[in-house]
Image 1 (tube, one colour):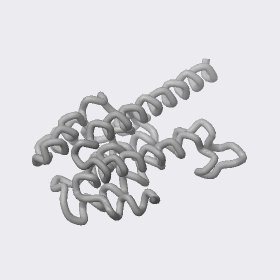
Image 2 (image 1 turned 180 degrees about the horizontal axis):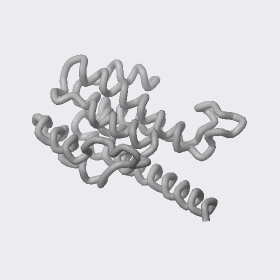
Image 3 (image 1 turned 180 degrees about the vertical axis):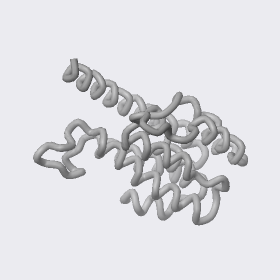
Image 4 (image 1 turned 90 degrees about the horizontal axis):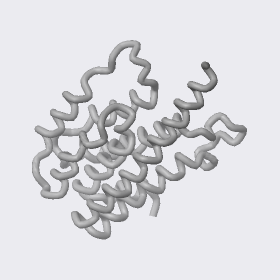
Length: 179
């Protein structure tokens, strides 16, 4: 089943988890990874996440002019700032779809293979891996319901570590060129 089909069939918890997982994988570009833990906890117990979401938004704050965060960090910030306070209805579906696209964009922007002669998403390993993670998260929730959240969090953590390593390698590479 395609990612689009999985999103179309997901329930409200699955959609919220999908959007949160995409955001979670990219959040290390901005802040401490633990910032989103309370939101995951709200998905587990199906409680209101609006207060915790407000705290996340406050912790993110506005982008600092001239901070050099880069386009990928700006996209990640937008994912979290656009999260709906209510996890039901069309808003959460739109957010999950937007987060899916935004996360793929972040991975495309950071993929070391981007800019090669084969600059298609199929040729970008970081993008392909992210697409796979998004699919796995939705499949876990479709098959296991709330019990799939723990494994979804693990999949997200794995992707976060990969993205952090890519950013670290890029920073070392850029530092070496400038010195």
